[in-house]
Image (cartoon, rainbow, N blue to C red; front, side, top):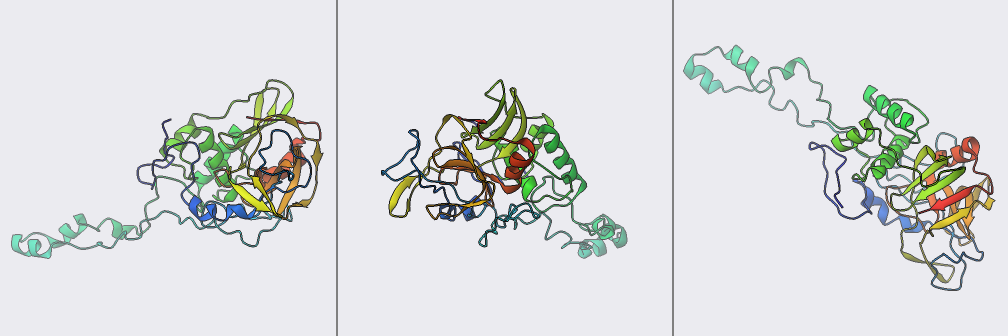
Length: 340
């Protein structure tokens, strides 16, 4: 499989193989993602991958995101009470700039000026920094990333929103919600998942890249495990594309039993929902407004939704996205859930 980078040549990018790709700061969060998971004590579904006779796990919220401060810190602007004191891994991506720009401003070869008898003032005007003296502002980078506030960020947000990627506000500020939407776009296009809008990501945006639904009728919540996306689908049309993080495949211990962080594939339906900050009975943390679709596995809100699989089996989306599923889109009990 050819992996395309989302950042332009002027950005920092690297090639990676395979489907599980972390963003630029994903390593910060990877060690901490095992702190949360699923944990409802009830009989697991037949599809669940268990290593003991104990019940299947439920997901919980707290673990840091894949960048150095947490853009999806919970609660998000009074959307929900879920709070994670240890969050803070996503928001420290430095805005790109030219730290050394202007160091050589005004410097000329004085020796040449004297020996040749030339006009030194003219030489300085044409020299290393003559033009920059007129404008000390750093050049705008050719990519857009977390932390930038600009009109082009507003254009990015509007385009993502128009295509159906989950963005609630066009506020010109590249924060956690915008980063989640860029992750989703990069996942949909098989691009490097760094949240940076470089040449390849911009091309996908310009081309109007959106994933295709797998179902053709009714209102369905589709979960694409391979691309780590949740799609809200109505009669075969994708109406919303949401960044997600499912089971990471690792084993873990909870209340004396061993489990595998596995998200089962298949056709299910929402059979139970909890309109609250729901605590895991395996003491793995809390889940924001979960909708259970098989055993102890649910789609739920989380303060941490990285660009790679990180949960203990449930499907994490941002808390604001979970609020949209509950309050705007619906997905009541009985709504089909198709996991592939």
